[in-house]
Image 1 (cartoon, rainbow, N blue to C red):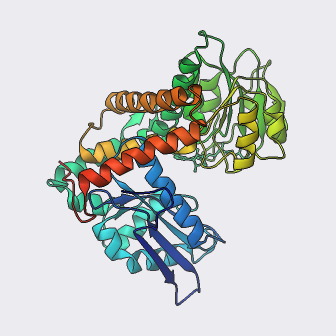
Image 2 (image 1 turned 90 degrees about the vertical axis):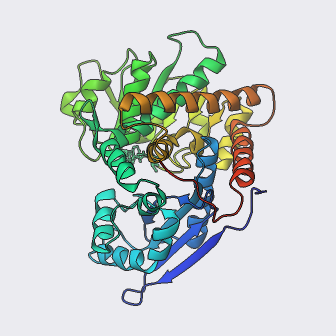
Length: 396
Ligand SMILES: NC(=O)c1ccc[n+]([C@@H]2O[C@H](COP(=O)([O-])OP(=O)(O)OC[C@H]3O[C@@H](n4cnc5c(N)ncnc54)[C@H](O)[C@@H]3O)[C@@H](O)[C@H]2O)c1
């Protein structure tokens, strides 16, 4: 059985002999002999941070019942430094045995997927999904399905860049329904207009949730009658910033720090960690928070929000859409067809969020506590079902 604060399956520390940079890998647990989690690079990254993130990955896979363990890699180095690519390359070669056998990694903070792909290629490892492909009974078939899924576009945007936000919107919709709000009552503010925030806003708008504010690094754009989300998406740069020349006459602007004052029922932080803190949480006037970013609400802020009966739907459920989709595709549970991806994610996300909202309404702790219990119980089931770490689930 697994417990909340168990020792991870593996901790690895790497010291780069040439630059002095340090690197870490933590495999929180294996399920079916496999673990998943991105590799990040940032100055100040620590083993503790990587361990927390690896545990968080297990919670994500557990929440959506994806039979894969959690892991994470981290490098303590400035990703913009000229040596960043060489350091990443040496790290990948040093931890290669893990990548070849059971750790499936991907992009994360400071490590974009194309950079990771090029480093994997130079190391002769193929895709960063290498370990998963090796486990497949038919690697060729799995690879072509995955390649197709990762490149197929939805209205001009690659599926991997929209699926996460679609999951966030479905999570918000399930939460709204469980609160029993009538159609049209919910308005939303989305902080962040990149991959996550942009598609969250698009799909919430299409679900009939009026988007009255979006926030990028430059400031907030507001309109109490609703923003034209598609117009703003067209005016978005590759960094998720909106060209203000595209604003309509009735759209207003606010300084970035005033984002919490925008009146809306549903607040979606989809930009940075620690956006809602003990210092600013009193300014929240939404009735529910749906966490799309990683750790956007501090524990102290969440406790105060709960005192005001404002539930926080936790990040490890809300933003698990992209990881869920990638593994359903790898396992062959879905094809590369976007409609199948949306259908499966909608079903799983709505099931998870309605369960935790029901538990919260029954007084069984906060949504985060309920989500942890559900995720933990799925992880416990996996431990029973898959048994020893070396046991594998074949991917068709
Ligand atoms: N993309 C995914 O599939 C995915 C999956 C899981 C979690 N996440 C998390 O979601 C968050 C956003 O990821 P993304 O991929 O959309 O990033 P992104 O780089 O595509 O977009 C970031 C957005 O946040 C805005 N922003 C930056 N600093 C801001 C600030 N101080 N105030 C307001 N806005 C600010 C940027 O202008 C941009 O619009 C991150 O926490 C990320 O870890 C993303």
